Image (cartoon, rainbow, N blue to C red; front, side, top):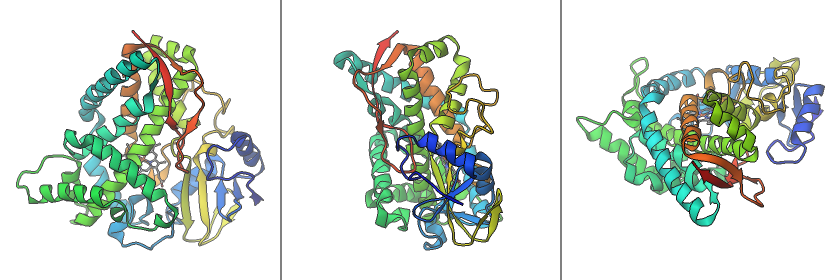
Length: 395
Ligand code: HEM
C-alpha cells in the first residue's frame, strides 16, 4: 500500500485530480498520513460501500451512542436494513411529483427576488438568494413544517451542521447539538403524537411506520429527522450551486441547454460526477476483508473517495471532461452505493431540475460576476460554492 500524497480532508487542494489519477494508476487503495486507508478506484469504492457486513459508517468512533441517537448512516447491519425500510416507506410517499409544485412556486418566488437584486446591484450572490434556500424549503415541506418557519429552519440547519463539524462534537448525539432546533422538532413530533388526525407528512409517517411490528421511538424519530435535514440540505444546496457555477462559467453551455432542455438531467448527473457534493465517505472495518487485492483489517478506518472514483478513467472516457453526451450519465457514485445509497436522490434531482428550469424560463444569460473567484464551502466532506456572484440577463 502506498502513502497518499494529498490530504483527503482537503477538497480544494491544488492538483488534486492529477494526484488522484496517479494514485489510481498505482493502486486502488492507499494510506493517508493519519493511517487511514484511502480508497480511490471506482470498483474498490463500490465494493467497499457495498460490503456492509465488514464496514460500519462513521467519521467518529463507532458504537459510542445508544441506537436511538445513532444516525442512520452509522447503524450497523442487520439493524440498519430495518430502520432504512421504515425510513423509505415514510419518504417514498412524497414522490417527487407531489412536492414538485411547491418546489416550482418557491423557486419562482426566490428568482423574483434574485432578479430584483441583480437589476438593482448589477450582480447577485445567488447562493444566498436562490440556491441555498430551495433545499431547506423543500425539506421543511416534506416534513410538514409550517411555511412561516422556513427561514428559521434554514438557519438552524446551517447552525447544527456547523456545530457538528467541530472536532469535539463528532461523537455527540445529534439531538444535543442545537437545543432550540431539537426542541422545535420535538414539539412538532409531540403535536402529531397528540393529534387524533395528524397531517400526512414525513414526521407522522416516521412515527407510524412499522417493520416487523416495530416502530421507531420518539427519540429515534428526532435523531433521524435531524439527520435527514443535514443530509439533504447541505448536499443539495451544493449540487444546485455547482450546477449554476458550471452554467455561469461557460455561457455557451447555458445557451446549448436553453435550446435543448432534454439536456438538463444530463447536466445534473455530470455535475454529480465531476463536482460530487459528497466527496468522501468514512467507514470503520468490523471484520478483515480483502478489497481489490488489498487486505483491510478489523478496526482500520477507511475513507472512500467519491471524488476520485467518479473520475476513474477505467469507467469514464475523457474522465475529467464535463460532457453532455455521456451514454449512461447516472453511472456514478455521487449518491453512494449499496444499502446506504442515498434515499433522497430523487428529491435532490427534482429540486435541481426545478431550479435550472426556473432559470431557463426567465434568464437569457448567466455569467460569473467580474472578479469572482471560486469560494469553497468549508465543510471538509463537501464540495460546492459558499458564495457565487453572477450577473443575469432576464428574458
Ligand atoms: C445532491 C444531493 C445529495 C447527495 C450528493 C447525497 C449523497 C449521499 C450519499 C453519498 C449517501 C451515502 C452515505 C453513506 O454511504 O454513508 C447518502 C445517504 C443519505 N442521504 Fe443523501 N444526498 C443528497 C441528498 C439527500 C436528500 C435530499 C436527502 C433527504 C431527503 C438525503 C438523505 C440521506 C440519508 C437519510 C442518507 C443515509 C442513508 C443510509 O445510511 O441508509 N440525501 N446521501
